[in-house]
Image 1 (cartoon, rainbow, N blue to C red):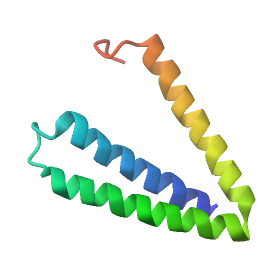
Image 2 (tube, helix red, strand yellow):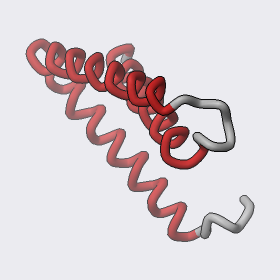
Image 3 (cartoon, one colour):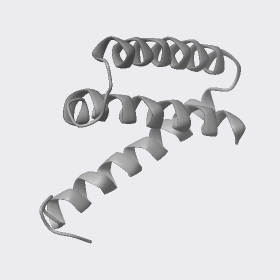
Image 4 (cartoon, helix red, strand yellow):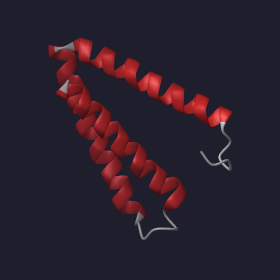
Length: 88
């Protein structure tokens, strides 16, 4: 369970950094090089962790992939149903 949490947390952290870089960088005082560095380091840590887990407990990788597919698929469906200008 903790391994799934690590994978989900790092992916979430990367999504937040990506959103800041692409959409909110001008609205908040965020420097692009800091965000790009954070993304690269997150990717490095995630890659090393997934590689390590794939050798010892591959079912965690499959469960994480399925969970992420459900999350991103659900988000895509939600965004299709509710346009971005509509409030929840």
